[in-house]
Image (cartoon, rainbow over all chains, first blue to last red; front, side, top):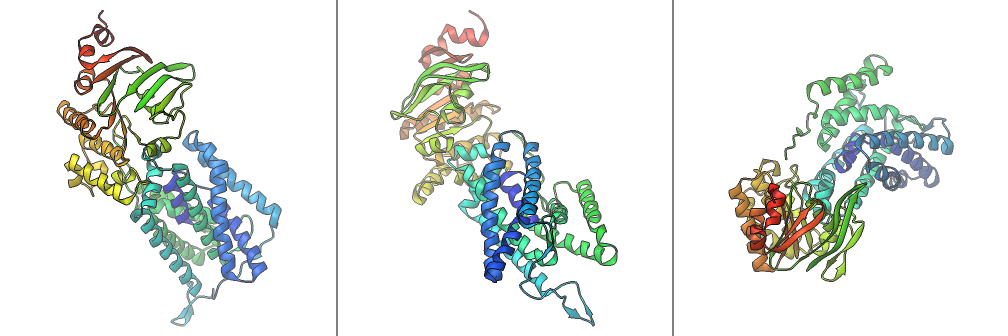
Length: 272
Length: 235
């Protein structure tokens, strides 16, 4: 999820608070697809495609018109999208919690005579994320498509003058981020019950991870996504689950005080 | 090559360009000179498609390209080097260059790249360095190099002398003049520094408050009264 936030930031310079809303929506889609097909992978693909389409729709209908104005309008607009998606999902699917089936075992590994809070399923999540980061890093830094996407984000005017179709690149960025968010949503759904609001906590966590990791850095997002996850499972394990968001926000505040550009972020300095 | 007919642009109530006509022939440099706020950058931006004109036409090889998107105009062969050394500091020198002309074939692009490196050897030496580590003059070379990567027939240079040492400006402009002469490139150079611009240009157009107030061969303009009037306020 942190990864999706970083992606939208990198490709459009907007912090997309609607990301969890999009992921929640696609998780419902996946659930519907699962109930129809009975196949976990069909559901995943439905979520990925749905995520991409939803990303493009949000970009085209909301973000593009808003972006013509200033930066803060776009961020507020992402909140608007989040609330609309939650309301929409409540109307379509209702607010009762539903269970999402895991691909396989969610019971923790057993070693040294006790059960650890780390299951084969978590290994799957971790593996998928590592692969995604590697793939995206290669696309972003080694291919001409990645170069066009980065240039469109850094300086749309120069990119357009160079002949890059910037609006296509931005739409593509939103589509990829939507898909990544959808994958994250489906992977994490078995750990929550699926409701229109069940991923709200994730927004705080993902945002924390993305900012601490450096909004520019894919590796940072995932590294601190895992790190934040570990710290928070310790917190939930040893104290009350309700403390997790507080600890996450404390981490965020601490980081902003000490290293505002993020641990893996580049220091922003521009000169003319 | 490029022909501007009666171009008018306004930002709200402010008229930035008023009925401007000019011609940019191939194989030479045409200069547009004028003081700050004369509408020079607006002219360049509307030629490149970044600003939509209210009236008038821009013709490229006889085709009306007024109001086309900047990315389409770039693909047709009109390349703008905007004011203020438009490089992307977050990318390497080579990535900045490779960004130009992505729609062209692989062979065309590698030919252009080696040509840019031979024109501006410093860019070749520093190809993997970040563009933010370059000096002002090097960044101007990089910005021109990126424009050349698009394989343009028309090169639009907006105020390349801004903030650069006179010696570096002279070097860069000499290169541009040589390119125009050797490869038939049509160059439109916009400059506040009239002396520098008119030295390499064949023809010059004087712009004042959005209106063309003088035009002619560079030599005549350099000696003319109008120019003195605009720049020095003497009559």
